[in-house]
Length: 466
Image 1: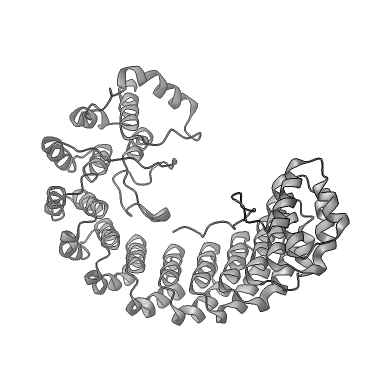
Image 2: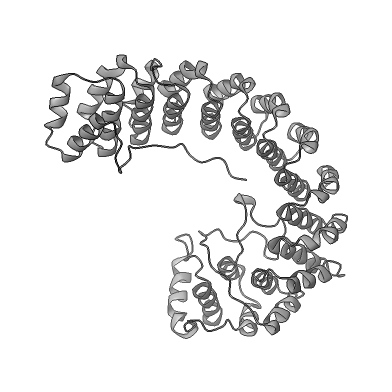
């Protein structure tokens, strides 16, 4: 165990990879610490690939996953990795970017040979390391193995070709889409999506009917990355009809990526009836990406009534992205009544997005100024600054008197100034405050806020990842 832990530490330190997360057991972390002295690489000493592969053989999957994460290539979203990897699902630990180091020709060949190992950990580490060398030698070696008799070798070769994003591999990967093993087909589709060759599109869409969920999902994602309107009709059928939620979700993402107006009505229908919350969430996101006002009614219904918090929040965000001012009152009602503080905050933010200067502040937005959530209050104060409704001044003043957060105080002062606060008593009170931050914010407000220190500018939760 000490030998294997040393292997993990060595790889992590060499590649500036992520630290072991809190989810890894304390015993494991202690073992790793104890092994640092004997395993630490010195300076820029080259990685001993042969020793690494020997140490990897027979390693417990948990340990091998940690080492593999340290040498992983970057990817895209939650689907950054291939559908079929030697170890299966890796342990999720935060990743950090790391520079690639050049391998010798001997080590490159050693790693390519190790791809045919019967040990999953050896194959996993080998493909992660060798594909950091994005050159013709590696691509050629992987393409040769794409036709091997061993299915596990073909799978890892397709994975590798996706990681190196080799355009020269397109034809070979297209042929592998007809492989009898689902993992090979899925990895080949995934690799073609990373390469983004339009030539592959006509070969990927038939896989929307594949009997393996992983293959259908990989093909849909790959087509979404190619951004071709010719695939919209096929993707609409998938998002409505596929039996697997993960595939329908992928199709919704792809249609959003393409910003297809033709898909608005289909996506709106799916948003209202799909039984899987993650599909509905991604569908709401896609409608926000497309930014077509025909979607507002369906999004408003989901934002008010969907049982899932994430769906309601994403639908609320999507309304703001579309920018329909007529939805302000609906958003105000959501801000006032939703049981989730995240949704209330996003609804407040959305009102600031759709309501231009001079718009009337909905009553629900004013109510959020008293919300238990500081994030929601900040978004409400920001939104009121965007709107600039003079009728909201009494509520803003009252909120400012009781607010303890300096950031929210600044946002409220901005809202007061943007709403036309000019009363001598209010300004005197602000400028005479015992809190230097309040005085500073008041001065900035009177000066128009054009200083190097910006006003609070809250944002909603990022989009659902694929």
